[in-house]
Image 1 (cartoon, rainbow, N blue to C red):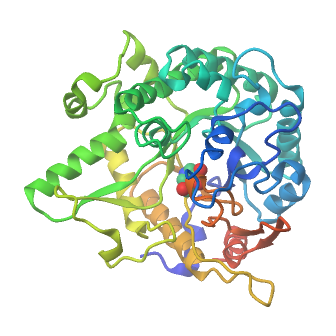
Image 2: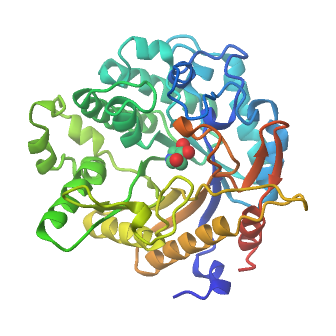
Image 3: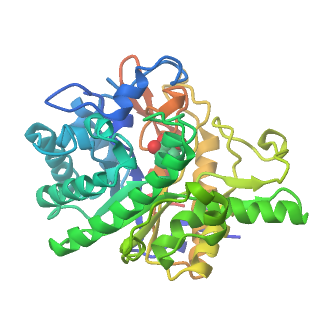
Amino acid sequence: MIPADDLHAQFPPDFVWGVATSSFQIEGAAQEDGKGESIWDRFCRQPGVIADASDGLVACDHYHRLDGDLDLIASLGVDAYRFSISWPRVQPLGFGAWNEAGLAFYDRLVDGLLARGVRPYVTLNHWDFPQALQERGGWAQRDTVHRFVDYARGIQRRLGDRIAAITTHNEPWVIAMLGHESGTFAPGIKSRRTAIQVAHHLLLSHGLALQALRADGAQARLGIVLNLAHIEPATETPADQAQMRIDDARGRRWYTDPLFKGCYPQEVLDELGGDAPVVEPGDLATIATPLDYLGVNYYSRGVASADGSFDAARSGLALTEMGWEIYPRGLTELLLTLHREYRLPPVYITESGGAFKDALTADGRVHDTDRTEYLRSHIAAVAEALRQGVPMAGYMVWSLMDNFEWASGYAKRFGIVYVDYASRQRTLKDSARWYRDFLAGRY
Ligand code: IFM
């Protein structure tokens, strides 16, 4: 165990510490300065799909509060800020004409970060996909892959000389499965077959984009971000063990095997039968184009039980407001599994954090000791993976500030900065103060 007061010293000086957000969750200005409609703008208008019937029209109003937010980021002492670009803000239809006002916003964001000594980590697709492209079939259409490559090249042309990293997609599993199988996220499609094809096209577009960006002379490091859980069996019975293996293959290896080995897990292909994706010759080699880094978003473990009887609420572990078990050891285990199975590039934890019941108290502070402990224990879990040889390169807190938590709306607060949604005023929570002091080397 690493003593709590010695945590910072466990990391090398070039380890990258950051905070993360995404465009739709914070920007607002959804209909301004020539921005096109995104599938999330459209989805939020459907009755009953967002818990508090909210939307991203104003969100944290980041678009209009850029300078203040840049100062806020810099005040934390982070090395990096991970944000995403709203594709329809910069290319309203997802193909054809570019929107200069949208591009200029990201120019200001990138320049503002650099002026404050913070490295920009850019994600191209954090879900706010152009509605016009959805109407042409979206990610289910193979042609969308080429539209994404054009978009990636356009962003590199504009920002590539000033950004540290480009992530193609954030959490392709979520886009495919929640967006196209359960339909609980935009675009709200409910078809397993479509979801599987979407996952393939996301991976293919990732590989093609990497190749195109490198051919164009990429200076930024290029990678992808996956949401991964460490899966454990509910019991040691053979049935639960088998369930663990298939859950892990469906949720994790369906993405990591093609990226690192150029193949899909056979047991999942067998299970899919006629729903298996259409894969053209050469696709898998393209998907396996070497990464400069892998981004891992980790929030909890998964527990596999063959009869589906496992209930997180009764597991005895503390839960976040999302109902997710707090399980830092799973992060170390996950990283060790990846390290064992693949030849890994540098790995960043690109998201780590929790939603907790936060309240602004009379002293003007938010005393979120649960979040501080969450961050501390997960950073310690990364230190342990590093100690055991995993090539860890960075850690980013999700999220810089409270924001639009997709189908959960604004009630779930993940920020280390509190946002008062009436005034949009930002207040550093105690966890932000702790992170700032930690980064200053005080813990
Ligand atoms: O808020 C999301 C983020 O957009 C993607 N990863 C998980 C976070 C918490 O649910």
